[in-house]
Amino acid sequence: MLGVGLILIGFISSLSLPAVSASAILKLQHIYANKEGRGMSNEQFQMLKAHDRGRHSRMLNSVVAFPLGGSSDPFIAGLYYTKVVLGTPPRAYYVQIDTGSDVLWVNCRPCNACPVTSGLGITLNFFDTQGSSTTSPLPCEDAKCIASNQISDYLCTLPDHYCGYNFAYGDGSSTLGYYVSDLFHFNQIVGDDEPYNTSPSIIFGCSFNQSGDLTKPERAVDGIFGFGQHELSVVSQLHSKGLAPNVFSHCLQGPDRGGGIMVLGEIIEPGIVYTPIVQSQAHYNLNLLGIAVNGQNLPIDPQVFTTTNTRGTIVDCGTTLAYLAEEAYDSFFNTIVAAVSKSTQLVMYKGDPCFFISNSIDEIFPPVTLYFEGAAMELKPQDYLVQQTTSDNTPIWCMGWLKSGAHTNDKKMTILGDLVLKDKIFVYDLENQRIGWTNYDCSSTVNVSTAPDDNKSIHSATLNGSGSVDKAKPTKSQGQFM
Image (cartoon, rainbow, N blue to C red; front, side):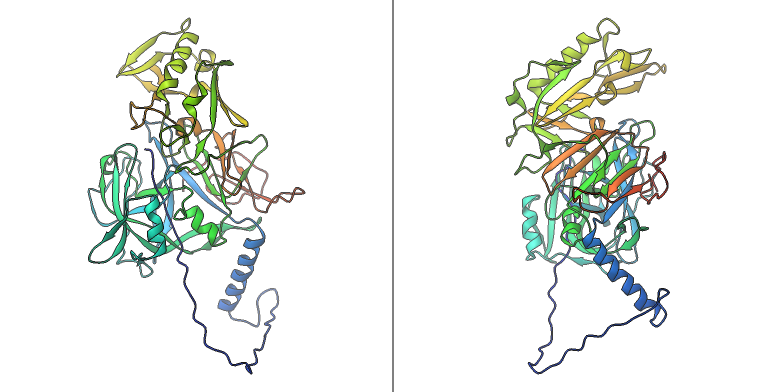
């Protein structure tokens, strides 16, 4: 699923202060307490700790971790999802992560054509604006509503005069709803301390009508968690509140077990290479310069990948497979087929180009290299092939890179989905407008930066697959979704 828009925004409220005469004397009082907090109430002590944590979070990079479920395998899940907790009382919702859209939205009650069960083995939920005591609809005249016109058709629902949206996705599905403000509950990590709960108010979408694949129960979730650059995204909102750095990262575990981790913060790992984000684009566009198969550059005109309004290369974890621009696809596909012609033959299986393989695909299929501005991405056969099983249980590997136009609206776009992004650390450094990556076992723990890099030292914490701080020596974690 290729996303379009995303998430949250915190309200900025004005505080009216009473007038103070020129002769007024303000007294500054200090309250001292010992280590256990004696001399003050428990409530005062908790408030003091919260104040200190807030101060520390401004001096250090606070990190928010979201354990992932799902898989890049289209026959298992074909998407990655996480759990978000919203409202008062807090309730959990499972949402697909999507770097191709900007807004967090969840299904609301009542909802037309929304699935009530999911083939992913999760329990679906509906956000109830009447059931949360802290919900406030976003009015049409709010500046945030006007700004939302950049990512969605501007809608003003009557007679309530709520700020509405209509998001359309690349697979033909769409969702209709309106924006609300409510509490977003998550565990914040500052330094090497244990995570503590934070509940800021953010803006997110309340969807009441679905169409297309969003109505199907096979891969149903409660909504979509967009990670785009618009001010309505959760990343932007939390950064503007000083609760998260202007960078996020993910490590998507491969199809065997799936899962992984999404971090609002920077995963640090030796070997990460970076390429600039193309400016003034709605998605995360990168400058792809060329492709090599088995070390040989393909004869593709670089202009095929030049970013314009109708062409370019997009990194999108909301898309399952990969799509190569029509003008480049035949050269790529034919070179792969020629490279394996002595070991296996091309067959068509259910309309897809496939290969019967009796041994390891690494022994037969060539490596592929994507050359970006200032960085290269090395791909294994598992990054462009998808395994299927025939009716007689014969293993067969099919092309997971498709020609754009076959399943997307634009024949000139190149889209790198989960098939390519899995088994790698990806860092979206929005502060410096660059994206970095390196190959990684995403069932392992990851190290995250918890202080700005001062060129002298980097403070870090180690997160395991459940998103918790692991203070012991990094060990293997199964990355189970909690």
